[in-house]
Length: 216
Image (cartoon, rainbow, N blue to C red; front, side, top):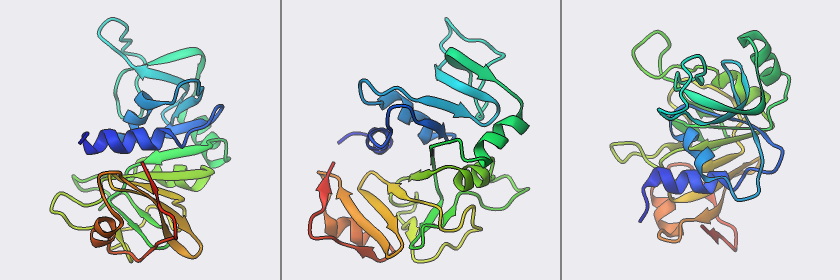
């Protein structure tokens, strides 16, 4: 079985459509760009001020003046542009980003997201996530189904501070694809090596199980 992060990234990439403007969060979300379906042309935006971000830089093409929001050196595609953070967040808050894909510490039954713990401490901070999940049309959370101790990350109610309230539309894990709807969380797909029963057993939130659940 493939590494969980690869499984998640490949499935998330299939949510992207030609012409989308996309922001990828730091960490696993950056991997999604490696698995774009053939023929799909999208524009990647980095909240530190790049529109038209390309793949990660290599030793041969590294430019230390060009880095993404995670301080990793990246390339840019022809026609890319650079701007200040005020302009970048104006684009984000103005609804000009079609999709944001980001990680999560917790997601709950209402589609609320917790992606930071305590500001000011040596733990994950919120970064630009609050703006991105408020401004993007489609918010996709990608995360392992359980935490490092095996506890569920998809909960009835988040216990950590909220990054966003009722903004998540899709949750993708190595086990499942779950849609957040006004009625609750709907299990749309399960991994071909998993089962509905396994997903339910590792999810604290109540899942709506439709008659037909797809495979990926």
